[in-house]
Structure formats: C-alpha cells, structure tokens
Image (cartoon, helix red, strand yellow):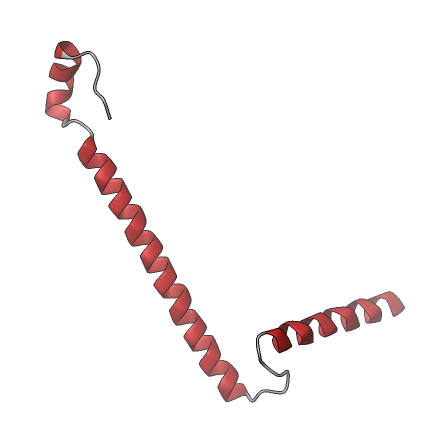
Length: 84
C-alpha cells in the first residue's frame, strides 16, 4: 500500500509540474478547461486535415509522373527504360 501511495504522489507532483509549465493551475475552473479542450481539438483537427491533404497531393503528383497504362507496353518495347 505504501508503494502505491508514493507512486501516486509522485505522479500527482509530476502532473502539477506539467500544468505549471503550461501556465495553468490545478485549481482552474471547469469552464476554462472545457474551452481549452475545444481549442486543442480544433488544432488537432487542423493538423490532421493538413497532413491528409499533403499526402493526397504527393500521391497524385507521383501518379501523374507515371506513364499512362495504355502507353506502358509501348514504352517498354521502345525505350526499355522509363526514367522517373
């Protein structure tokens, strides 16, 4: 039981230190915390959308660089090598 108590006290102290580093207090009211959580979710969704858009753009560009399927066999016969 003593080890569990010490472990919990240590994690609580670490959490308070983290909150202090972010400029927050442990006793902040719930309304302020909810607002901050909504803002954080907006930031996370923005980041996800940006990442997905970048990935699709890269995929489309890579796809455009490839030779068209209907010309692929002719290119292989004529050139034997297609430089990407």
